[in-house]
Length: 559
Image (cartoon, rainbow, N blue to C red; front, side, top):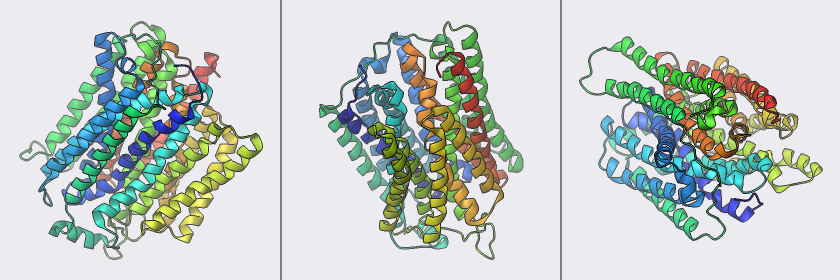
């Protein structure tokens, strides 16, 4: 497809980005609810993210193997438009299955929780196909140099979904009445809050997926969009990915089995440590195998496909880590805020008053809203403003986005206090400085915001009170701009392997499946606040990634 400014197609396409954000962010409220309703531990609750984001990996892998076996790029043969439609239909089927899966489920029925995981896995499979098609599609709708800006615009719409998702889900499940954690737990245990609300919600979601699929099918603004690139099977890359899949299946299969009734081989501390070790093995396997492919592909490109390019291999690890840290910060945040560490004074580990499931929705919304602020700001260049106007917009747009977040929370009955507005405004100002320093340069952006992320997470781990809470919340602001930077840097200069490389990158959304459970298990063994050292390490790796990628692309004269 020729590169052209096709704004109408772009605006039509970004509708699906909204749904990804809405569903993904809702997990921040849904996870602690599941923990209470199904009587599960923190690690088990993070399996929600494992099922959802693991499906991204499996879906992209299936598509790659299918293409390898057929000798042609299946998605390219369909066209990006049809790929998105098929993905929407798969997600709709998953959402419909939620109704019979939880029908009649009562408090404490842990086995039903695994049916929920299956549903989320199917929805994630559909999202995987949508993402694999939509991201290169967005880049193809104009000048490749401004591709990251278009992805930021799409990401901004995605983040609007993430902002309202937690609030709407909290309202649907818990209602509008302000209830304490004890009151909510009692309602759940006595049947005052049931999964029937979830059934109706997902029926509505299924209807929306189907409606958008029909809209895409009849839309004349959205071309099919195909590349002219030939497909190469990349057998060595396929074998590495299959090996990684086998390792994950074995590790998490054993973990799932350890939670089944009658499992009594080991118990207590030894059992918890074994679960942690298995989780870490799957995490380490990703880095070891991708690094192996990274080195082998450089030395001998035959059979490695897109992985012969070091920027792509490194980018896969970058996407894995970025998605992992973005998801794990918020998915463990709810339990951090509602966990009782001081029974006498009813305080959570941060030294704040223990919050209920409905009360934490505001902070989950604020976290994801931070991503919206950054992505709206990062998308300014899409509209080609003059330099003077651009400087003004860099100051105005972040606070305009913040105003939307404040308004949405006010309408939902979860108002952000004046002190919280002031604190977050100061952090937004820091982000604006970061944008000015980065000057639309992807490498500089990664360096600056990764460093900000490291500092924020260290403050969150070492401090207490609102200082620690807002340090964790800033993770959304500093993650906001990373996806388009990593994605565009990773496929820079890989030519005919762009489509395949995009598929490999989508697979690495796997980070959202593995890193949150690892943090969840560390939280079970140590403390939830201490488990956020995981986030510190993730941002530190992303900082290292930016320096390594700069070196690689400079060597290829691509900078």
